[in-house]
Image (tube, rainbow, N blue to C red; front, side, top):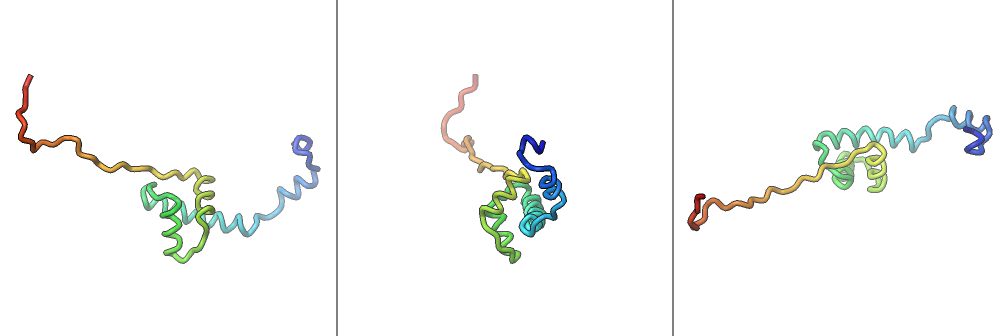
Length: 98
């Protein structure tokens, strides 16, 4: 694998042993919060509403960051359609029975 990636073995093992960065750690904490908000909304909140909820809780983060974390965790909101009545039962027209 090191030959394919053109990386020395020592560099690969150094990378493997390196601790996670602060940003990655913050993203993991943020992902937990995003998943909780997403589940509470019954999978209907998108990145904009989740970002608003996070700001209500005092957590500032960018819209793009929330989108990225949702995409990485496979969180896709469900689009619901409004109910539209297509039948009017209270009409004055004669009804033909076949």
